[in-house]
Length: 243
Image 1 (cartoon, one colour):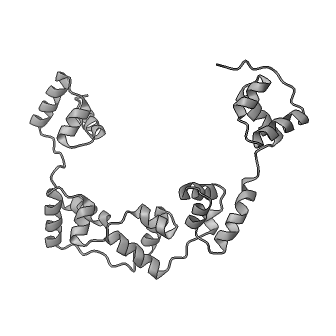
Image 2 (cartoon, one colour; image 1 turned 90 degrees about the vertical axis):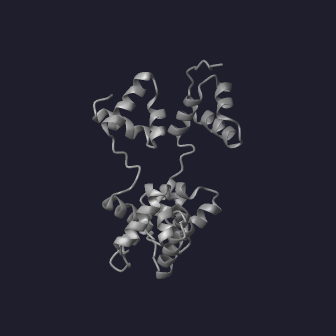
Image 3 (tube, helix red, strand yellow; image 1 turned 180 degrees about the vertical axis):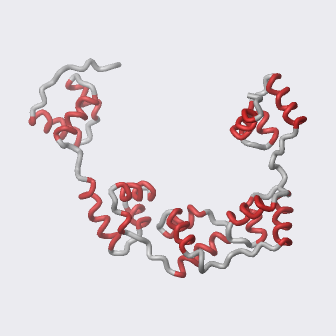
């Protein structure tokens, strides 16, 4: 049932009374209904009067002091019962995080390498260290000159190709070969070629797809049968002039 909104004269006393009711736990819709107005009307009145709009920097000031004292953001987020990423974005939005650079130790870098070697997702590693995934990537890239790079011999490339063609994911191939960088595996195999499932579309294959489309089969069904994404199939068919 919709509320018929009426014009109301907002006096300081009325604003104060309604706000006190809200602070005591009464729902905004109940307060608005008792005045015969919409919820949006009363919210706008509170906002104009400055109710419920504390300075966010004042709220974050104690948090910033604790961070500067060396406490971890992930621990503070847990204490506040707030998702870590939400708190991180709030601090970043107000320009606070640039002054809170993570001090990377050799032990932290070794820990990252060991966990990646065991196949632990980067997001889990970042959460454990109390940093973001991008912070880890940036630090690892900064240290690229001192890292031992993977030497890809012809024998190692051939072994990686065989594993990939057996149906293993790039992450599984990296684990099997003891390679710490999944990206290195992807890039090397892409350059080397010879990976099954790269979908080279022959005329016969395209003709078969065309017949299925004319028969009424959906792109989703056809893409699933060929083991590719629907959007990839759609782009390819448009490029070939079949859509």
